Image 1 (spheres, rainbow, N blue to C red):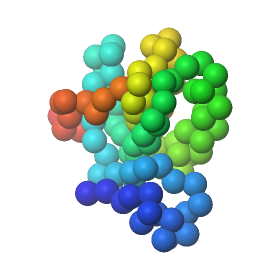
Image 2: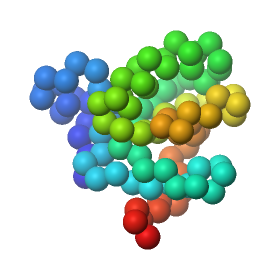
Image 3: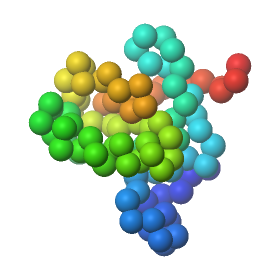
Image 4: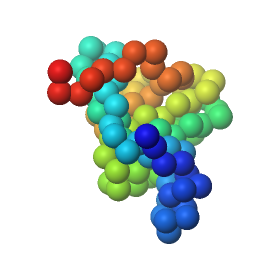
Length: 102
């Protein structure tokens, strides 16, 4: 289950990701570790160093409010940007989810 950006705004939240997950999901990072995601934000752009830097404060706000999350860059991103342990960068939704605690 999840809450959409529209639903969160109805609750009075001014800064919201596209989706806030009611129950975190686990995904595997490139290094094989599992990351619990609490929110997803979708960006219809390429994640270049400059565009990512412009959005970083937005992502940090989501992390502070909701915990770690996922940013989907529709047109890819510079892989060297994926270094934040609290914000996972991907181009597509992960095909495999991990049961947390297993």
